[in-house]
Amino acid sequence: MKLLVTGGAGFIGSCFVRTALTEGWAKRVVNFDKLTYAGNLENVAPVAEHPGYRFIQADICDAEAVEKALREEVPDAIVHFAAESHVDRSIHSPAPVIQTNFNGTFTLLEAARRLKIARFVHVSTDEVYGSIEPPHDADESYPLRASSPYSASKAGSDLLALSYYTTYKVSVSVTRASNNYGPYQFPEKLIPLMISNALEDKPLPVYGDGQQVRDWLFVEDHCQAIKAVLEKGRAGEVYNVGGNCSLPNLEVVERILKATGKPASLIQQVTDRPGHDRRYALTNAKLTAETGWAPQVDFTHGLQATVDWYTWNKAWVERIKSGEYLRFYELNYSHRVG
Ligand code: NAD
Ligand code: TYD
Image (cartoon, rainbow, N blue to C red):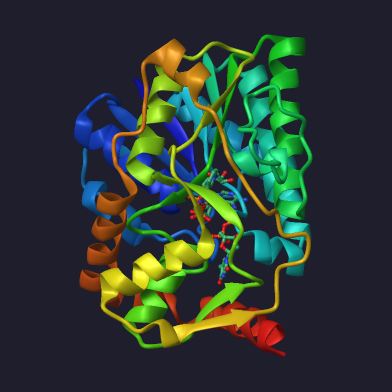
């Protein structure tokens, strides 16, 4: 199989690129990535010399660059990860989020339609459902009630992607995953931020009362789910991808403190995120029934593996925790501690 992967230098996309090439089920993987602050070629260094790997630095909003790559490579499928993926950044600065997540997806769909690409997997998020009232778990027919510019841009792009199946019969499937964690995650998201701050004895900023619930999915399980949808998913369908692991944020932070051997005094409660969704929870029943996929990595093992990775890769974190990262972190943090 030949794949064009967008956003393959980011956290989840790079895991997918590494997995596809090292497991050998993709013979060729073209990584199409703009290298924003979140893109990092170190994430794909393990496969950079693989004969089937090619990197193209370009923007998914650039129709000419997209078309050129597709004409040169003629992939069997596009797997679309590229996005502005951080809710807090989308609140501070929504324009690039709408541009990449909505207009960029449109550019890719148009190219896929015109060049008759056989398969298109659009990687999305459970955040499109908004906050889910207990005791319900969202299935794929749950209403879309996005709360942040990030989740609204993803909900909009999901609908656009599905419309390309309904209208033009482009073979699109949409995946909606819960919160991912694992190695190589940019330390602006909860788990890598808390691990890296704990390792540096810095405060762990918990938003509001810390009782917001997220469902946690190990990144390698997510990549196997995307492979399952790519190979066995039906066109025009949405598939939830959950980790069967709902936890309040404060409990996640406490587990990180335990795993890093750091004191609870590092926890700092800070001003809440505006429009903060209280709870995400998904059912995977459809994906499991249609493809046999189920998450394999339990949270205790996945978290320990992640803590170990950040402990052994402090240099990777240090290189990121400068420049753009630091500017946004300090803005966000100082804003919250008042
Ligand atoms: P990330 O922020 O780590 O990586 C995003 C990648 O996209 C980066 O390599 C960046 O350079 C690239 N990119 C951004 N704008 C681009 C553009 N205009 N053109 C080309 N490349 C561009 O993101 P992630 O956490 O790996 O998320 C990947 C996808 O998975 C996103 O679509 C996100 O919405 C979705 N998702 C993420 C999570 C999560 O917990 N992280 C959960 C569910 C779904
Ligand atoms: P995040 O990793 O940003 O993912 P998302 O907003 O996409 O779910 O945040 C996960 C949860 O952790 C969310 O409820 C917000 C909370 N959070 C904190 O409490 N402190 C932080 O510093 C961050 C980044 C997130």
